[in-house]
Image 1: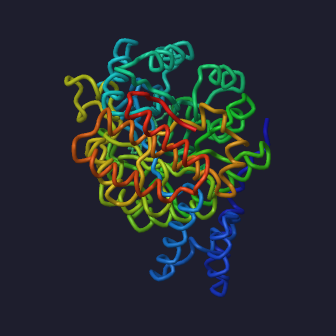
Image 2: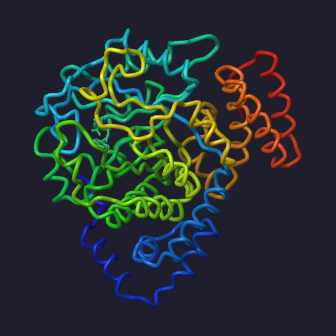
Length: 463
Ligand code: SAM
């Protein structure tokens, strides 16, 4: 049995100390963050303890600058694909709980194929497979078939190039097997790191086991999965506590495996059918607090991708893009079968209701009009830039050179295959600007060469 890496009492102490000591060096913490060295939990607590709007603004500005230094201005797009909604757990905030009585389903291989085709036709190259916990109807064999099915589908010259998964925690041996399926990131949210709240919102089912879930990422890494994605469901407990716990989680993985989380997700509770709690989250997080959460995580763990989903409203998403978010979903459905079947109703079968209903093309237009570079890149995973190798590029801020080139190429491919006349025109202007930002040298020359190849019908070009 592993020793718990999380000391809740210590986190609470750190938080209360930072509130008492008004003289603590706020500017010093911002200066350290700007040097891309990350922050200790004590330093992050100093930022979390501030309530002055001017200081908040300084945090936001610093986060924006750190995000640009590490990843440049690219935003990677992905879509979730829900495989099932039958679940043996009964999380009080979720629409998939077994006692809620929603329309529950498990997709067949044919249905997974249809969903994948619909997502490819929408321009996606990177999917997150999401499965509810239902060992009887959805076991490892079934998951393996689902991943194979997704990778096997093609539409024209396009295919899904990276499959990430969000599924219940497994043993080290099962993670070892999961790695052989060819997945990118293994993602799992602790929901809340506060043990008491965790017990109260998970009244039954295997998910009740807080410690099994807490150490899932350690087992995943032992099993050879070197890109893991952590997260907390904001609204369940005090957000400052959750941010520090995410940092403790990060530090524990870095200490043991020399690699922190590849991504950190910041979902907020959204309305879910049959869940009273989803309407009145016990620790509701305001928009400004979410901005602080994203910014402080960006400053504290500069190399991690921060993921934002369509749970959030379009206008807020556009603001959060500036503060450190680096990966976003678009046009998501949280209903199994929701992309390809008109019979599936969001009202009766969604896990929760999404807020940003824009199409992928609309999201792309909004991103590119705000001077961000949309990216469908899946290169790092395919050339072996994962785990420690990825971190060696990301930590000093070198990954952005690959990110920019791959964003330009994958965006151009999207424009040619799925864009309308407007995005083809504005997209070309953006690509010209992005190329100008590239240093003169081999990478730029090769990018220009590959852009011309795309015009001549070649696809799937990356560095
Ligand atoms: N079986 C996996 C597991 O054990 O985590 C997947 C669970 S669920 C399908 C994926 C994520 O959805 C959860 O980890 C939770 O954070 C999020 N979620 C559940 N209910 C939600 C709600 N009402 N609003 C926003 N996010 C929610």
